[in-house]
Length: 327
Ligand code: GLU
Image 1 (tube, rainbow, N blue to C red):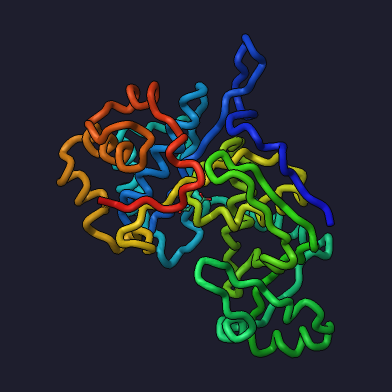
Image 2: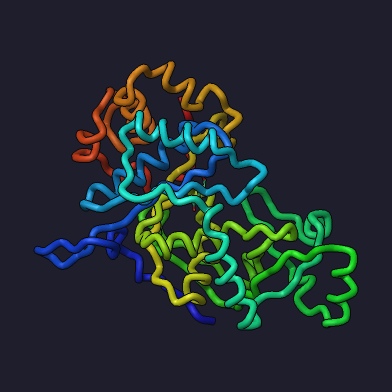
């Protein structure tokens, strides 16, 4: 068994564009990566706030990427509203917006590369098949049991007559892990705890895991700050980065904001969306101060200017925390 990449990311803020002439350390490149499927809610605002603070603290920059891979759910009106909300909050970005919908050629090229290396295979399983094959416990992800991995060429041809396949990446029985700046050490044996995963859906759309790895590398992102619901995806992304020869970014997986106990906020929670937040708090300083106080990155919930919070915020209260109650 091989362990990959533990230790290499003990420090959150390394690498990226721009060099500090005194120390030789490079400034981090962070990113905002919103999905334009609705108005932002308090959890999305907290994710953007943390990405901004962590990058800017060390003189870094921010890339804005609109994650509109899901063509059915993504709307340009939501992308515009998110950008206006970022501006309202003072979350400025240095490059972008880049749109995933403009990057299909890059995804296609990388996909062909994996295919030519014999790492992909067609999967004909339906959602129902997958459900029957494994019953994940709450909070665990379903492990693909490898049903279609060893179909013969003839079986593949026969199946393809009735169903367009999705494409899966074969994973090794190896441990991929990281030292997350908030959640600490996290490891996964890819074969046992993840299984071969999708890089392309049966409708031809490229999967999030593939797109995000290519985007982060091509856009020079060195510091990924995002919700801890994505922590269990990170070993897959580390594996893809190794396959393509990319450097691993540093990661900080922040707690989710929960609407009710054990239920994270979603874009359906209107009372915590930006429209309601702007009406309730009146100023960006009041909203940011409230979020900083309830999450514990500041000592109080008092209104605070972003630049002042940048001087004072602390990650200590977040360590090991996966959920914070909205109020
Ligand atoms: N687009 C995702 C979201 O809005 C974030 C993906 C990521 O940060 O890797 O939740």
